[in-house]
Amino acid sequence: MDDVLGLLYELRRKINEGFNVPIAGKVMINKDELLSVIDEIENILPQEIKKANWIVNERQRILIEAQKEGENIIKEAEDRINKMVDDSEISRMAYEKADAIVSNARKNAREIRIGANEYAEEVLRNLYTYLEKTMSTVKKGIDQLKGIDE
View 1 (cartoon, rainbow, N blue to C red):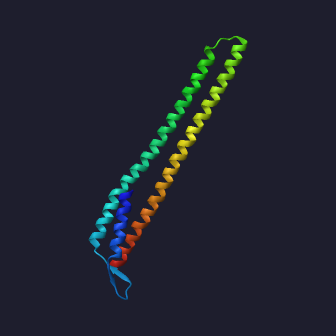
View 2: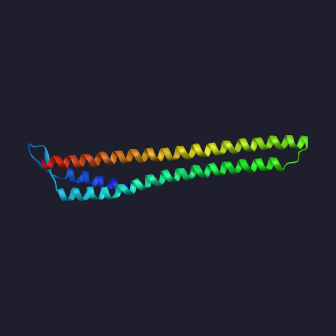
């Protein structure tokens, strides 16, 4: 992302350093230099999109892992319940403890899932905002280039 921001800064600098045309309110700039910077931005943006895709895939992996971990915890709790002696007092205590473990496991799995979703959503929103700003700046640069040619 820093590369794109640096290139956008360079694009803005080149436009600002262009030769002002009196009365017309336009700036003469080196078209090849600006197009070169735009080409670099276009080359970098697919990398940023790959990063966004990686974040989405990583989020999915975390969710799947959290779900499996929760299921394993629940299965272990159920296995412990089945292995306990069926004596009334011990069984009652075992069932209570097992229920607490299962409840805690479900709570932990839910919290992990919620946290992973929130993290992924925040990262994607930040990336979306950044990409919007970047695309807006690139469009302005292209529009300014079009205005110069006209």
